[in-house]
Length: 307
Image (cartoon, rainbow, N blue to C red; front, side, top):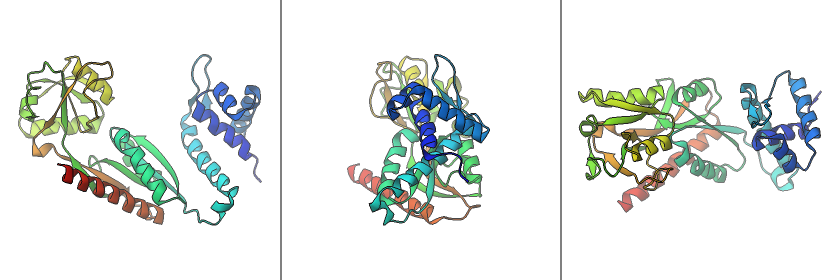
């Protein structure tokens, strides 16, 4: 017997999306007390807390709620199909979870999701943005079907398809002595204070590039965010290095910023589509892999023609 109603589950998802009871109640056109009662009923039935509520602060999801909300969204999407006569004539081909490395997500996640929704209209899509280690763990555990990432830290337990190869770029203030050059090398950068990502595999990879070329660089700052890196670089705090090149010549705080490609061939890194080879190759994942590879192939061809 089912004890939770779709309406109660819809309330839970609405609160997670809105980030507050007040906003969710307004979006659903229900009273805030009624919404609060529904949440308590769901949490009591599950025996788990879904939200951490602090007065004056946004509602945050518990670790348990992260997976629960994803499953609830899939259930609600399927329930909506049952109310759509046109959808009943189509076959729902299951659920696909796409993972994306956090540095790549701003430039690639949305276009890939758009292509997948167009090519696989009967597949319920979910996505997760993770660091390298979380992506690998989630793929091993079967929680992520496909992942767009760099080829770092993935062993023979994963199938890997190269999507494109990218060179890193150095970000600096216009006053930097390297700003007048069109291309710079690791040797040039080894003499400058560097700003690198603090994520373990990322910083080890970058430092190994220097050490394999017999350079011993100085790391001035370690950051979690590309925009923090660009801001520090624009303000003369060092030179940032990243494989992602956002459009625009200004940091978030409005300072001018110069980006220069790092010319060393050894620094070129492939962006890959990865999947665990320890789980069944589902038809939805196979089709999604074909769509993503074709999408990147078309982009690569267009870039070559425009070069």
